[in-house]
Image 1 (cartoon, one colour):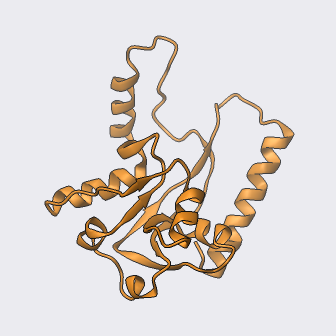
Image 2 (cartoon, rainbow, N blue to C red; image 1 turned 45 degrees about the vertical axis):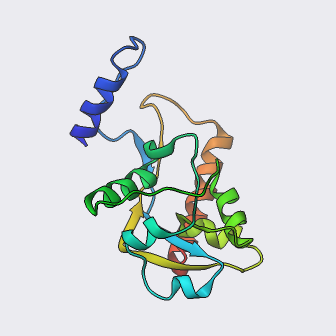
Length: 173
């Protein structure tokens, strides 16, 4: 995305040792994953959740360190702004796993990638529903053009790619 590359160049301008290359640096892009609304209360996942529903919810949001720089949180904030709303979580945590755990305990609801719910909701206490409109997250493994991956990294990428493919085929992504 040329606009994203230009923004990156502007943000990284103070650092002489950084070069922004416009174009794809990914060895392989993964299938997009849907970010879903997650709750332990079945009544809150009967219909897709609008941005107004999300703004009114008792939310537990992951990626506290990144805040609204996190792509998913940024998209939610943009949707809320357009609607004249704000998203104010009751709890911010570092990881989606922590958000899922707290949601399973009934502390509040969260928004995370659908594949993570399938992997981390081991007690099957959670229910999911799409956002309206749906929110897709894109992932890729990015490497330097001339870099060789270590055997362990290459294997990790193979395993993650294979697992996500299975989740996509089963409809859990």
